[in-house]
Length: 203
Image (cartoon, rainbow, N blue to C red; front, side, top):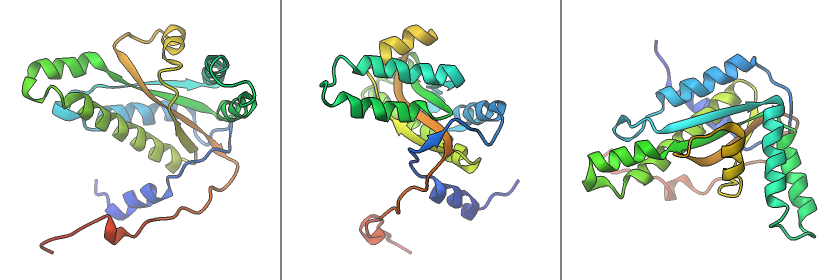
């Protein structure tokens, strides 16, 4: 199977943050699950430690996550600011699903014990792997017709998430990837000069 960089980069360019989403899906739920499974299976990790973990929430389970988030934030957000916060969270709730991304700290610790010279680096390497998993899944979901956005409500929701979905203690929650069918076109994206960001020597 031959793939071109152009085809891959088209998907990369198409990926954007979509916030106006509705609870409709262009593909079967089984295909969504397959995308996340393939992402977790094939995205690289340092020393092949395979520390990425994911929980896919669809339907009422997805809605439950954002109800939990609302209730976790209610006591800590000032009352006059809470309506805006609740409105934003309900916007996420209105989407089709959420992928909860974790990193298994048991695997990170195993790498630290096996390679003590790099012990301080493995948590960083773990974050790198998590970012790649999130990005690949996000791009793949958009290629299938979804829009998505990435949220970070840890550690505020961690305990409730652990209780609700029986999450192992060693799984550290990294982010929440919200996805659904876009109902609006995102604004134009601006770019800083690429010459200031990429340097080439020897060409």
